[in-house]
Length: 364
Image (cartoon, rainbow, N blue to C red; front, side, top):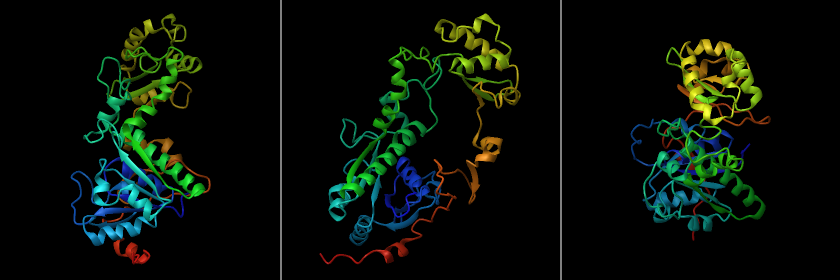
């Protein structure tokens, strides 16, 4: 889908590499500038899954010759991704003003936690910090438990990488139409707050409360995760009345008057406790035999390995074991573009190839 687009990624962590991987998944020529002679960040693999489908060039951006080569490369690109604190790229001589003089159509993507200009723009932070301050963490667990989300998914990926990619694609379309590039200021703080607008819409109908456990999606007995007899878990979220009715029917509770008032908040804690006792009487897979294929809106909580082995994945092939790595396939899918996982390059693997393809340096 993005065949012919060239994206330059300055090596970073988390949302920047993920965004670049996603663009590579969609067919862009993504070239990562890896740091020359720098060891891999502790905890990260030599050939990261997030580098799949990319090409790698190793440069020392503090070396004048390598910096000149980076500028020559950026001059050939449609977009650039960087994820440093504000000012770092400017100090390297690769700020947006410099790069867009070299390449007026360049879409310059900047990925930070707190934004380019803010009271916290120069301070460190991580996923949980950004979504805590943006409000996106508030409803992320049962009311009697501390808020907790899947690591990095809501902030780094949802509020960060996804918004960076959307901004880059919008910038690329605009550059094609106008001949002018733009700067994309993607802040995890902003993106994670923006995702909250779906919940904010519930406030208009009185179904969102600032008190945890009193809103339409974070308090009811029919919107919970329950522990089963074997320690496994099932996720229940039968929001609409017809799905709630099917849920009760499968459990044999359709005629129980206690469950008749689905949206009565005063009953939610007591009915949650009843369901907790009920689901603790059988192992997870027994419950799922009852619910599988129904409109009761119940699903087992699976590990990645279990998801790989599930019949759903047999058809979709969403989870794959390829090149010695378990990974999820590209998403979304396109009717005119077939995707297959490509291996991640070694650091600097394509350095000479990329340099050989660059146009000669300007005499000016």
